[in-house]
Length: 279
Image (tube, rainbow, N blue to C red; front, side, top):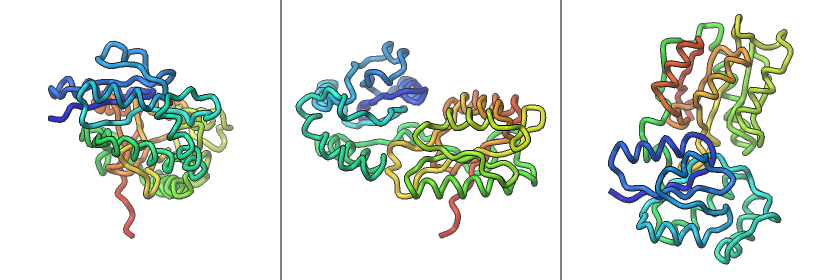
């Protein structure tokens, strides 16, 4: 079993992966990205590194005898002028800046390529922990009512469309009206914007309506940056008055699945995995 180097950004995904390694007896080492990683990760074996300390990161992974690397967790697009890189990071910054002009996916590919050239195998979070992936069909007790299906279909279509343009991964549709699309602000901020819209065009907790959909960007590097749904997503969707969530089956990650299903059932939200459309 290859030792896993877990490069950890923000949110609960790195913690879930570390705990999965512990439960399965897989050796692991956590590189906590300074300013992004959850403070709780300090209790796990590993070290803290700056986001531009590429040489130090690779050295620490080699010293820890890691053979595979998994990038997990949220990391905001950096201000390249404010970075304090080491020599290896400094050498890569021009390529990252050029790639960044073509979108987040191009930037991530440059970073992954640098690690692969050093001999590390890249594993996606869904490969490390297969049960993370959203299955096809309903997840939990609630299912979309007939009046919600059109919103599911349109929200998924919008999410896939903005993904092709490398804008974001999520969209909210209510009664056929597009209420919001996700860009650099992320899912939480998008749902907060929806909750602040007039109730005349959205649902409310006592009369839920509308759907948030998440989809991976077509052609994106699936080993990093897959869309994520967690307990916070459900809570914010409920506050925004939505009836449910939809996501691409197999290409959206669900954190803390048992707790996630229990909370969705408690809040009355449906969660459904949607298969890819035919080519």
